[in-house]
Length: 143
Image 1: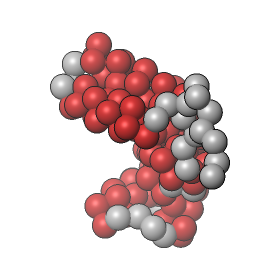
Image 2: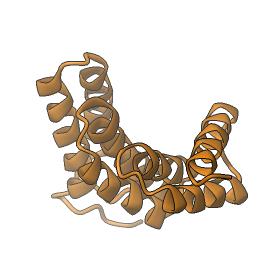
Image 3: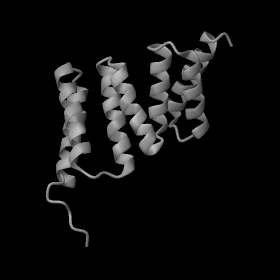
Image 4: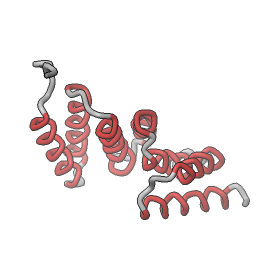
């Protein structure tokens, strides 16, 4: 039986913090969203998580920065980390969104979004969003 590091956060503690982070983000209030980010970062720092959970945590933080706080450069860091860890297709769609709508780098956005669609694994709504963003990027490129 593997011995658990006594300094590592337990599964119950992590689950409790995760639920709290989700609720805080749902408030829509910036101070609470910042606290949600801190909780998710704590789970990352204090617990050895499987890659899918690491990716989810990084996407969550990316969403907080991108969607809720409008801090797109910070969001990109977290989405890119999620994509490195798991290849999470949602992370690629959100990178494409930032490139398209905030960086105005239409070619890079088109490339990232095309890649996200080619990888597969997107849920239907996320696939539709990626297709819409890709069409928007192509139109901006004149195609």
